[in-house]
Amino acid sequence: MMNVNDLISNYGYYAVFLVIGLESVGIPLPGETVLIAAATYAATSGNLNIWVIFAAAAAGAILGDNVGYWIGNKGGYKLARKYGPKIHLDERKLKVGRYMFDRHGGKVVFFGRFVSVLRTFAAFLAGTVRMSWPRFLLYNALGGLVWSAIYAFGFYAAGNTLKQLSGIVNYVAIGIAVVVVVVVFLVVRRQTNLLADKAEAAYPGPLE
Picture 1 (cartoon, rainbow, N blue to C red):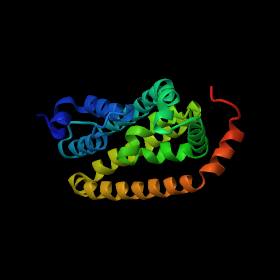
Picture 2 (cartoon, rainbow, N blue to C red):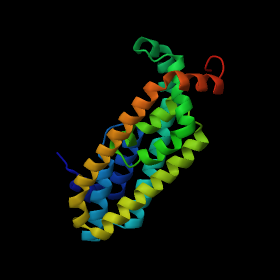
Picture 3 (cartoon, one colour):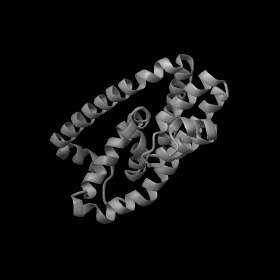
Picture 4 (cartoon, helix red, strand yellow):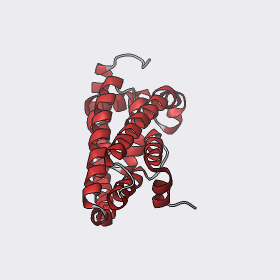
């Protein structure tokens, strides 16, 4: 079975674009690992251009996220409306989700690019709760560009040294993400009625 390093050495920029793009759509693939491997390979072998790696990563991230958003907007939303009540996801909670994304979705989309689980599902969730697409696109593009630049040029400059630290960085990021998610969940749970009232005032009547 081909490992990440073989994937990069054989398919180069195409592997970076495709893996990151598919991960952003919602398929759990190692996009960050592929980007790190490509940047390190470029630094140590000189066979790849770091600027093209950056462009491929950013393009994959932005395009993949927009496909994920579209799937959530067209498919996830309808499924949530149809089957949500069976898992206690009624219209009231959908409105709360939309309300939260309208106000904090930019942060979720931007910073979610740096956390593996959120990187895979943030775009789909944004589409499902009908986050404004122009606003999503802005934060999606900013997150994709900044994330790609940091990992591509950072690991290119540091070579194998920074690669050895990537595992620790990932564990720290995941730990922070878990804490943030738990805190947000507890806050939302305690303020559900208040948020529901605000969401109803923001989106009166049935959802379209």
